[in-house]
Amino acid sequence: GDSVTQMEGPVTLSEEAFLTINCTYTATGYPSLFWYVQYPGEGLQLLLKATKADDKGSNKGFEATYRKETTSFHLEKGSVQVSDSAVYFCALSSQNTGNQFYFGTGTSLTVIP
Amino acid sequence: DTAVSQTPKYLVTQMGNDKSIKCEQNLGHDTMYWYKQDSKKFLKIMFSYNNKELIINETVPNRFSPKSPDKAHLNLHINSLELGDSAVYFCASSQAPQVTEAFFGQGTRLTVV
Image (cartoon, rainbow over all chains, first blue to last red; front, side, top):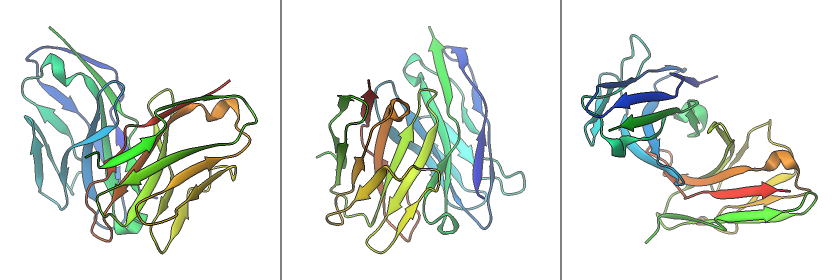
């Protein structure tokens, strides 16, 4: 079945460091791909998305490109801030999955000043 | 206005009790979901439901049942609560058949003692 594999955490970075969180997927057909962020004590918020191959999603300085050839959707940010500390989830959804969203295991990011 | 709201935010109850968590969305979406997040932040789909179809994750015990009085509500009933049911439960919604993002509620932290 469709699934998402996400880089294990936790990740600790200094402020202004470069961030990469890896995400690869397995899917039949052409899923949409998402990154969600969960701040402590809160629900999940959509960070960015891409709905077809070669699309780049971007928001708040974060970017991810839908790579069909490598089945990947890695999350990147050039310069992280303390306020970026959160848990990040990669996810996919498609009509093949009955429009259900399948999430990776989450990667906890802590940014230290 | 909160797009997806769930109540209560916290629920502490004894083993063997029956409890419900309510969820409402004001986005006009066709599909609603329940997810369970365990202590390691892993998110598991429990149900997805629209006005035509209920999709149940086969690993969910039949003590859990979704109830949808109308398109805007999907409540979660849990019978004979067990210690292992302790988790955070998230309600979400999305618009089908287009695969747009899912909007999440703030979560209900269920503690079974």
